[in-house]
Amino acid sequence: MQNDTWMTQPSSPLLLPGTEPQPWLQLVGHAESFQVGENGRLLKRHCEGEERCFRRLMEDRLSAFVPSFHGVVQHEGQDYTMMDNLLTRFHAPAIMDCKMGTRTYQEEELRLARERPKLRQDMYEKMVAVDPGAPTAQEGAQRGVLKTRYMQWRESLSSTTTQGFRIEGVRKANGECRTNFKRTKSREQVGEALRDFVDHDPRTVRGYLSRLKQLRHTLEASQFFRTHEVVGSSLLFLHDAAGRSGVWMIDFGKTSPLPPPLTLDHRTPWVEGNREDGYLWGLDNLIAILTDSLPPARTPGPPEP
Image (cartoon, rainbow, N blue to C red; front, side, top):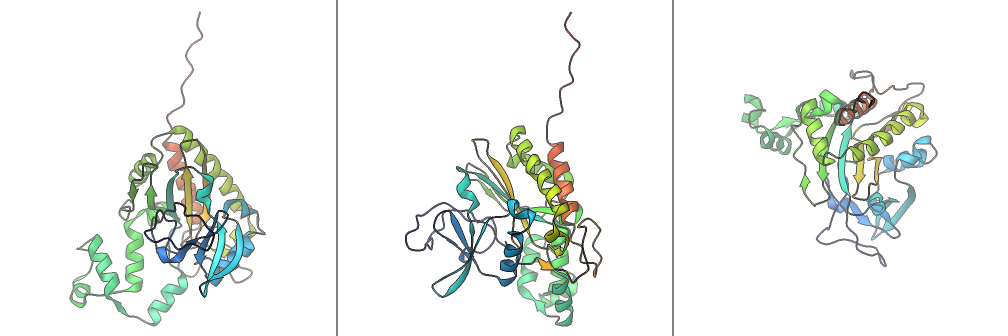
């Protein structure tokens, strides 16, 4: 979802008439963007681009890997996209949001930011909060950074640039929440974070690997995926103590159709203008890192005499 995911126990849940309160989880993002709908549905603040993506995805082979779309509804004068609430399929699940790709900003955002350069104090303050030494002397004197500078600096901190994905947030089954992955960058750091998320359980890892490999195969054959720049989209991971696990694609607010006949392979390195997003390169690395977390297979011993 566009800079947001799921929520748990909001202090003032906004429910439609007749709905029952149920736990959500917001790992990162804006609580006001969501409401709980009826019959296991989730309402997300409407975005025309995301609606177009959902309508096309429901007709694509990727439909099994995204929340089912149930149209656009209005509540209190606001339009919402209605989709399945994936959390209802699990009991007290552990949840992880992974932002996919080698960049989370669109080429159009870079172009507009260059055409309309504006110093951003809010982005400067975010930068200093993470790394006080990151701003240049000039940026420090101005107490502001350009949006292009902030966006590219932000990506360079994490595994977005080194692995093609980054962990945005984790909520474990015991309620522990973590969103401090901004500087989780190396393959070893990412691997440790993933192992901690699954509590070093090989069964859970195998369940995720099976689903991710199916997703990769489907993405490589998908007409939608081939003809869209997928930026800022996440994979939502869910598993529970009963052994259920699943992975779904979410967040399509920045996913854009390509001008025909352009297509992407999603593995070619991005050079501004080629629209490549690195999604499949990141998925390849995610699968490899999870595979490395499995215990080595036992070598059979010699037969007994």
